[in-house]
Image (cartoon, rainbow, N blue to C red):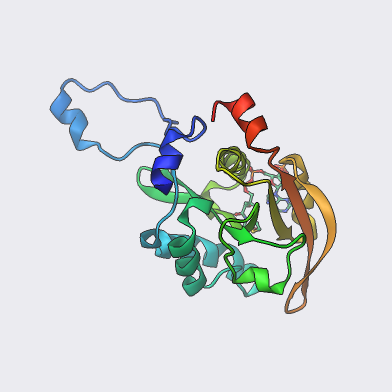
Amino acid sequence: MAQQQVNNSPFLKPFFLKPQMCSPSRSRQRRHTLPASEFRNLTPQDAISVFEIEREAFVSVSGECPLTLEEVLHFLGQCPELSLGWFEEGQLVAFIIGSGWDKERLSQDAMTAHVPETPTVHIHVLSVHRRCRQQGKGSVLLWRYLQYLRCLPGLRRALLICEEFLVPFYLKAGFKEKGPSAITVGQMSFTEMEYLLGGAAFARRNSGC
Ligand SMILES: CC(C)(COP(=O)(O)OP(=O)(O)OC[C@H]1O[C@@H](n2cnc3c(N)ncnc32)[C@H](O)[C@@H]1OP(=O)(O)O)[C@@H](O)C(=O)NCCC(=O)NCCS
């Protein structure tokens, strides 16, 4: 169902970053079945690849990942439709994991909870493979994810927390600052950011949902 939603979204049609090599025969083409570039919801089978990227991104920097492997498995099992992965030739290069949340602001409980059928998505993590950073992939994936969320019925906004140095990145993506977050992890404090999805009617009118 989630996969179907992605495939039906006009924003998430797989596209090809690399020019296709002309190949002389159809049988030859068939051997190369992995798309050069593909966006799709993640599944629990992707959890190890997700966690490897996450571990490299966060453990060396802060000593902690936003999500443990168990939490990744939990969210990809509970709400795969709120995740999005970018695959190049079958390899995960960037991902977002979200879950449902039912309060105005994020609190410590939001770190591990998925509240179904709520108008708010909590984006737990956006991470790009270290070899693929600073190439625009984080921004593109986030944009695609937000466009995709607009097409999911009932969703109104996305919330996330980030460290101060990433506030400009999220402002550029259209988020607004909501102020200091109540959530702390060890010594780390965060800013809460909000993105208004504009409502389903707006999304349908403007994006062909
Ligand atoms: C943050 C992250 C997702 C950005 O993805 P990306 O593909 O590298 O980013 P883009 O190429 O789309 O955009 C680059 C912009 O991101 C911002 N940015 C990225 N990393 C940054 C950092 N470490 N410090 C400050 N700004 C940073 C800058 O605004 C930069 O713009 P500039 O090139 O004009 O300076 C990626 O660097 C990453 O995975 N980092 C590790 C995990 C993480 O911190 N995730 C976010 C919190 S969940």
